[in-house]
Every structure is written in structure tokens, then in C-alpha cells.
Image (cartoon, rainbow, N blue to C red):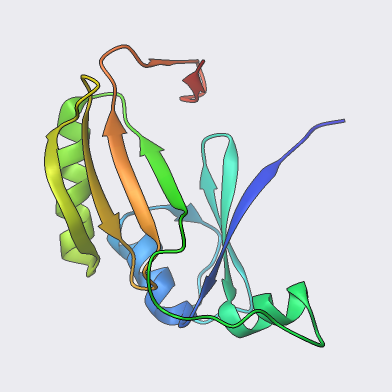
Length: 143
């Protein structure tokens, strides 16, 4: 059986999130409209899904949906890139798309190069290049 993984982000505004990921960062999707009920983006090895936050909370529990707030929830998403320059380019795209750069591109203590940004809903992403990272023929990070 083929297994497909999906990261689902509950977003406060589908239109704003789609503009950020599709129009700003160039993520590939079949979503043509700006406010669909759900939108999937193609990423190597997994799918990124945007889903309205209130509906995601109700999907978790109709009777007692988890309450959402602001702030860091202890989770970051990582975007691994093959070249150091790709970190800088991604951060340029983030700025142009309206994201918040949380940590400017810089050398990491472990020898890589990285930066952090938050999307319009406050989800933290690390953009990272590792000098020893290897990728397979599909662009997936090989461990």
C-alpha cells in the first residue's frame, strides 16, 4: 500500500494563506480560487494542506474543540534546500509574500545555514541547508 503523508495547517483566512503559499512562495497546487473549502499543495514527499482553523478544531472534537490562541505551540515545519543561496532566496520570497522573518539567514552551530519565518497564521518554518545533506532523485532528503 502506498503511503502519503500530509501536514494540515488550520488557517484563520484561506484567502490570505493561499496568497502567501501559492502566489508568494510559489507552492504548486490545483487550487484556482482564493477561498476554497480545502487546498492541497504539492511538496516533495508530503502534501501541505490548508484547512479553516475553526473547522479543523471541530474535526478534532465536535463537542469540545481545542481552543486556539497566539504564540509558539512547540512545533516548527522544516523546508530543506540543496544550496545555501536557496535559504536567502526563500527568505526574500517570504518577505515579498507578507511573512514574518523571525531569524535572519545565518550559519547554524552545527555547520549548516538556516533562517526562521512565520507564515501569516503564525506557523514557524525553518529554511535550512546542510552541507552534508543528500537528496534522492525526487528531491527528498535522504537519511
